Image 1 (spheres, rainbow, N blue to C red):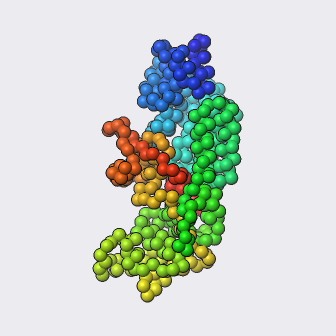
Image 2 (cartoon, rainbow, N blue to C red; image 1 turned 180 degrees about the horizontal axis):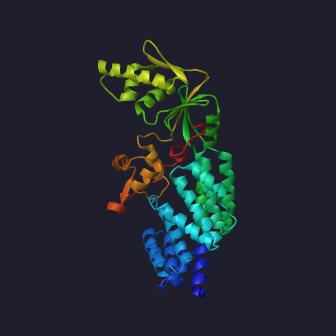
Length: 406
């Protein structure tokens, strides 16, 4: 490796892409193409970066498997940053195996970190945690160590374990400051703000107040009956009724939870559950049917008692009923939560992350765009969706992940 390539690589490691480009911008050999690709990625031109890295992999050829594997790892990172979750993970695993076989421990470990990051993005937390156990962070540079600790913190936040999340963020901050890379330091600081920003709204006995992630963790560990509008479940102790695929039933459960210990009139339930303005006998009949179904779903948690004017929720054991609602209500809150990370998402990547049909996601995006909450960039397969982050709206509780006890 010549002196210019070495100097460019050191500049990239220090977070100075312009310094790297000053040394290799006019060169077309394989190492220079690879470094130019990484530099363009750091500058935000991900399309150009991907093109350069693929050209570098071809230029290295089959006789340089380690260099080609490093290009694959760099392209995988670009795919994750651009939220291209359809990028083949098997290619990353194959590259990691090549790097391990040839003794490149640092890049092999980084490939392992990228695989864990992808699992975090799509909500496969059990698999991500099991891979973390096998990941050796010893070869990491300070910047790589900070990035890995951010993933550890992200998993802990999804699990609603605030103490481990705070510890991981402390380690990430130390590593980021050691690296001296300002964008990385800012990323860690942004992640830390999620712990001090209201994560949900607590609604109980007619009163509403914002709660932090740590308060949500305490609430979920308590013995109160929780109507969780972030995950569309009703829980009390170990009993959980999942109503994510029963939106009418959950709307009724939430209305009853918000009114507890009082009742909800039949007209109020019809409005919340069926969104009807003019009630007739068919609506009342349907309400009786849906209340019967909700009773069956909540049989281990609470009773639904008919009153003269409507219905009332009566917990079996819990002394209190609390509704846990997202900071911002909306029909497509989960899609908006992913868009709120500031990255540009494709509809296919959103479908993978939410485990939903692409057509369902596309309808949600169209609705958000019509409401001015999302914006499309590009056309065809290059189309990406973005949304400005909503102040005070961390996405932790709306992203795909099981809650404690699930």
